[in-house]
Image 1: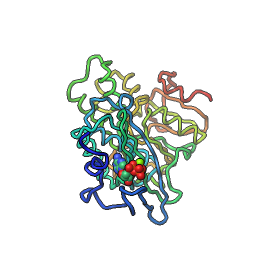
Image 2: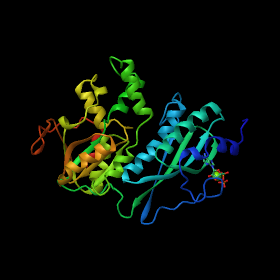
Image 3: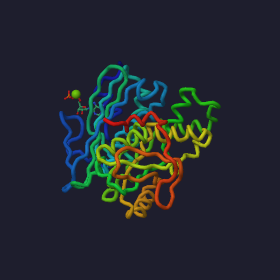
Length: 333
Ligand code: ADP
Ligand code: MG
């Protein structure tokens, strides 16, 4: 180790002038950082850890890894409708590799800067590579978007193109026949390794969405959390699902598998009253991400997936049987 712990922090993990205004009243370097939300705002706090071999491949580009470690945390703020303020970084490193550290901190701080989310402290230890981030955001008192607010009659929406990250994972696993062409692989690999947290959309959905969650474990699994917390059920139409152009190469059944059961997408899944349909579309447009209506909340618990498209009365078609493993989330209990 040619670089001591404190030099390492000063060189790679210090919020600098180029990285936007300081939010911390006391930044890192003391025993605690001190921050305060603006008057009338509440703090939204979330932690996510990435462990080598479990959440990322050891070969991943360190800049993309730095981006992703913060992105998955910003995605949780987005799902709550919170504006990013600050984060802490608990970094466990097997060795001091300056090229790796430069790449990692470059990707991390670039995304932090983009969202005005200041690095205010952390912890640095030796051990198997792991990155723990705690992110803090602010939201007007009482306005955080929750999983528990979905109501019968609400429309069910998803942002962007879920399933792309899963296609990349399958390509890495070598399960695709035929394998992806180079351009498709590069595109979906970027979605898996460097996801875009939907922060602007989350902010635009404040006061509009009745519930929200970010899709980290797969659309159906995460929908299950919303339905259970809200005490409602849902009907979805396969024909209303957004199918990414990058998924066009897969058979239709696999496309649906990736969209519904793939994880690591970090899209927002949310509900809103039917009367707010046009406002939801406008929110997506303002946030620069398409939003797709994929189903409807109803009072009967559980999830029903229909094989048709969206008809004038809502999701249409015949019920499809339990094909996806995430359906386990909907079994009784
Ligand atoms: P203590 O022993 O008081 O917990 P540390 O020696 O762990 O303090 O850290 C010293 C200072 O450096 C603290 O202000 C801490 O927040 C900051 N720090 C440590 N690791 C990191 C990191 N990876 N990124 C940013 N700040 C860090
Ligand atoms: Mg410490």
